[in-house]
Each structure stands twice: as C-alpha cells, then as structure tokens.
Length: 517
Image 1 (cartoon, one colour):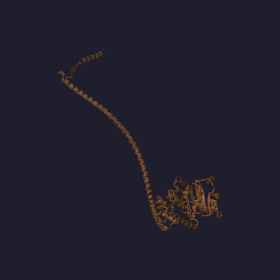
Image 2 (tube, one colour):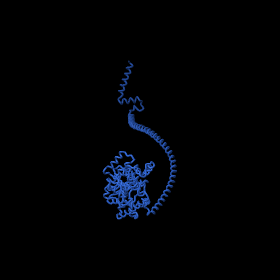
Image 3 (spheres, one colour):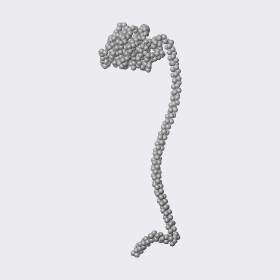
C-alpha cells in the first residue's frame, strides 16, 4: 500500500518496458518526473510550476538528497516530491559515485547535481549540498523515502512560528505500516552498557498508535527526513565528517551540538513520510552489510568518546527522564535490540520477555475461550429476553388499549361531571332564590303576626270596653234585653238616633215618592 515501486517494475518488465545492460537507464526515465525524457505526461501548468521553482533565485526550501545506487528508489523519491509538495523548493542531488546508471539519469535532468568520484559518505555529501543550498530552510532527505501529501507545509509552519525550534522531523512509517522513526532518545547512565546510546523510540509500533501521535521535543532526530533552519549550519557548523560510512550517529551528534546553543529538536506527527529503511546499508549484499556493521561500530566508539565528559542532562532532558526510563525498561526496547542486531548482551532478558509473551498469549487464548462460552450464554439469555420482550410488547399493547379506553371513560365522566356541575349551579341558584323568598315571606309573616297581635290587642281592648259598657248599662237595658232595645240605647247615647230618624224619613220619602208617582 505504501510503496508500489516493486509492483510497478514488475508490471513494466511484463510489458517489455524494462531494458537490461546499456538500456537500463530507460527504466528510470519511465518512472521519473524530473527527467527531460520522462514518459509521464505533464500538464503545461505542472511544467510551468516546476520551471518557476527552478528559475527562482531564492527558493523557500533546498531539498538535499545524497544517493548511492538504488536508482529506482531515487526516482520514486523524486516523483513523490513533485506530486506532494506545494511549497517553493529546489532539489540538490549529491551522487556518491553510484554505479547503476544514476549518473546518466541525473545528467539528463534539471536538478542541481554534485557528482563525487568516490563514496565520501553521508556527512560529506550533506555538507556539499548545504554549501550550495539557496533556500531559507534545508531539508535533508534519504532517497529511500516516499513523501505523502502535506508532508512539508506543517514543518515549515512549525519553524516559522516557533523560533526556539531549530529542526523539525516527520513521522516515518516503514513498508509494513509500522513506525520507523518517531524521535530519538538516549539511554540514561543508569544503564552502563547502553548509556547515551541513541534509540528510535516507539520503533515497530503501529503507525497510528496514540503514543506516536504526540508532538514533543526529543534529544535528537533522524536525518532521513529533517527540516533545518539554513542559518544554523553557520552557528553549529557542518556535519562531523569523522563519522564513516554508512552514516550513523552524525545526525545525533549534530542535534546535540545544536541543542547546546539553545535550540530544540521537534517531532511533528502531523507530517508523514514512508521510509524503506537502511536499503543502501543492509539490503544490497552480504559484503556491504559487513562493511556497514563495522562502520556503525566505529561510529559508536567515536561518538561515545567525543561526548563522554558532557553532563547526562544534555542527553537525557529532565522533562523526558520518566518517559525515557520507562521505555528503556519495556519489552519494546529489547525487541528493538533484537531486531536491530544489538541484543546479544540482552538475550536472557529477551528470552524472558518471550516466555512472558507466550504466557500472556496463553492467558489471552484462555480468556477468549471463556469469553466465547460467556458469549454463547449471553446469546441464549438474549433469546429468552427476546421472548419475554415479545410478551411484554403484547402486554404493553393491551395496556395501551386499556389506557385508551380509560382515557375515553374519564373524558365522559368529566363531561357528565361538568353537566352535573351545571345542574348543581342551577339548583344552588334556585335554592338561593327560594331562600330570598322565604326571608321575604318570613318578614311578611312577622308583619302579619304583628298585625294579628295588634288586632288581638284591639279585640281585647274592645272586649274590655264592651265589658265595661255592659257593666255600665242602665237597669232598663240589661244583657238579656233584646237587640232593638240595646241598639236604641246605643244610638241615643252616641247621638245617632236623630240622624237615623232623618235617614229613615229621607228614605221613606223617596220610597213613598216613587210609589205615588
């Protein structure tokens, strides 16, 4: 997925594109972007963009690529630069006496090329490129790398915004999708056999492991891909050319020198590249592998002798001590020793970790079996729960219907209650009206009783009067006298007898007058 050059070469061989011997250069031109005779079609826009970059006097970035053979990888690297770099740049290729057609290929390109008659090693090649670099920033790049989209801009932004950062490096991912480089740490002095030896932290972890996604400053960075301020080469100096082929420790040495004058080395995980890893040193031939291993031993001794009198804090910063000590005591570190051929002294501990891993795997298998049993039980329980759930759903449905009926009944009762309430209000009004009428009749009754009382008083008074009058009658008019006699007595007493006589006379006259007429 990451590196496709092998598949492309195999496809080209099947199609008859690859030529052997003298025509081998055509293989590279088939896969090259930079070559004038490239078979890949470039749009006028792309060509104009490349021309502007190369003709401009002061590019933003100078990309320096030291090469020794491996022409196919060099072409893949150059193509990825053109495809995935939007910033202004120039390319400087330093050829350390390659013998596979690299010189012929570079002769036909517009890159700035430095050709050495012998292999002068990585430090010397870098120093030669820096001397002619014109960019504000210098990018040191191995030819066995392949750049991913957006690889350069985050690093430029980091250096532009943070003046205390002297260099910044990306996350390097190998062909298996694992970490090749995510920063370099140096072993504390508490481990005498490994004291101050550099180690690529988190090497071999998955590329998306959270531990590798933390931006931080490390004691050193790998120079397979690094962006450095151009002026620092004047302050720090060139790479130490006493480090011999295959190019190990000179990057750590330069980082320590830079940090001594106050700058930091920043790891930036948002920038990513693919790195095949040590193709030149260890993946060409057995003889070259032996040469590289011997060179690494020499460089290791020279590096330790050079820095033996410096304080430990220069190699193990205080803010990283806990992280570094934890890593150097972890299985990941000893596996790194084993994979890189440095683990002979730690074979016993590595074997111990191996047994621990086997035991751990056994426990994991046992746990997986138990989990499968629990899963089967859970499935059975889920089926039972599902059956109960269906029953519950039926009950819920019935309850919903009952609830709907109850709601309707409640509405009806509320309506009836409302109607009864209206009737009750009318009854109360009628009762109030009757109560008012009763009160009025009670008043009238009281008045009637008063009148009756008054009449009774009048009757009593009249009876008393009559009693007195009867007692005062003359002897000739007693209670046993006839009515006419009594009437005559009263009329005389009241003076009404003359009037009655005149009335009778008047009536008689009237009656007699009518009869006569």
